[in-house]
Image (cartoon, rainbow, N blue to C red; front, side):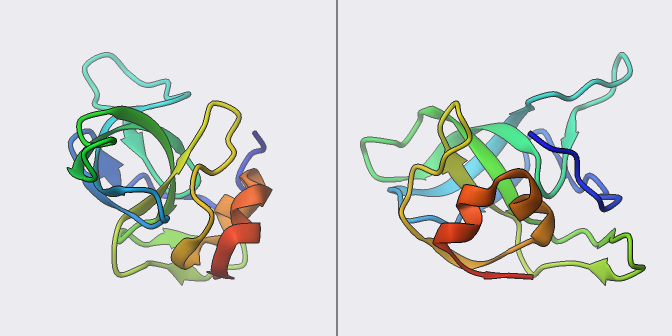
Length: 132
């Protein structure tokens, strides 16, 4: 997993709800952990665009509801700054389910994904409708 060029503000904390934007049976996810987060004692882990997170499926089909899955955050409402000076924000918080190797479980992604995600997970760009 490669580093991200932008200074991504971590806009999602534990307990945040995310929309699942792929065509798996999951509809709504809750953030329960962040993979690779190293922080200060007593501080809640936070995640932003391009981070790999552990989520619980809150709404969805009966086969996936209540399961713990890995997901990549592809959009966040909190704006963040890119290296070229632009500030980017999206209208929702969204994630895509992935397996342990970082490959997507679904076959298509609804909506656009951030360029920072494509830098880290190139396979997500192949199934997305657009990159911003």
